Image (cartoon, rainbow, N blue to C red):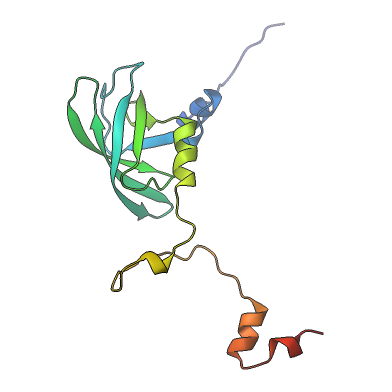
Length: 154
C-alpha cells in the first residue's frame, strides 16, 4: 500500500508561528517589507514612538536601535496597543514580521490603563477616551428618573 499525498495545504504564516509557540499577538507586521533588517539570531531594542488605532489593529512607529548602533524608524502594525514610550526587544521572523517575547506582551497588557484619577490632573487637561463597554445600572436609572431607589426594590 502506498501512502500517496495528493495535496498538502500550504502553511500560513500564522500557522507556522503557532507551531513555533508564538501567538499572533507577539507579531509586529512591518508596513513595508525589509530583508535582513535584524540579523538572524539577534535582537534589536525598539521604542514605541507613536500609537494610532486603525480598525481592529494598531499602527506603531518604532525607533529601532540595531546591534551596530544604527537607528531607524519603522512603521508596524500590531493587534496590541503598546503605549508610546514602551521599550521592546524584537527579532526578525521574516522579511515582513518582527516578533517579541511573551513576557513583553504580558507586560504591555498590564500597563494598559483601566482607571483614571482625575484629582491628579491639572485643571484644563484635555482627555481623550474610547468607551469599550457600557452597562446600565438600575439604581442610577432610578435616580436619574427621580425615583427613590429603596422604593424600587421589592
